[in-house]
Length: 59
Image 1 (cartoon, rainbow, N blue to C red):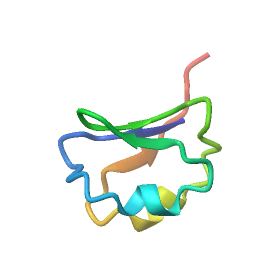
Image 2 (image 1 turned 90 degrees about the horizontal axis):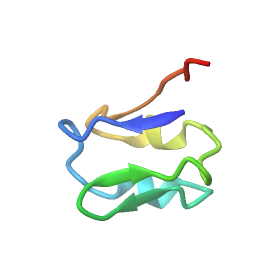
Image 3 (image 1 turned 135 degrees about the horizontal axis):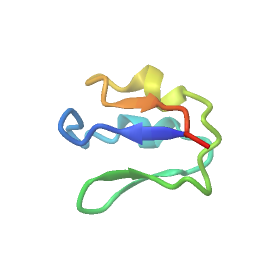
Image 4 (image 1 turned 135 degrees about the vertical axis):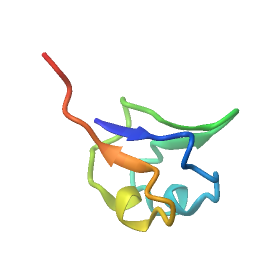
């Protein structure tokens, strides 16, 4: 699951422009739509602030 560290995020929009699933949205803060996110990792690679990461869900 892809998550955003809102303390690090500057809401620059770089990640939004590369997301093939349109899973990243800026409202009050940047958020990831889990229904649309495929965890491809493109947003993680382009984030200049290191604010996006993948975490494993506990089952």
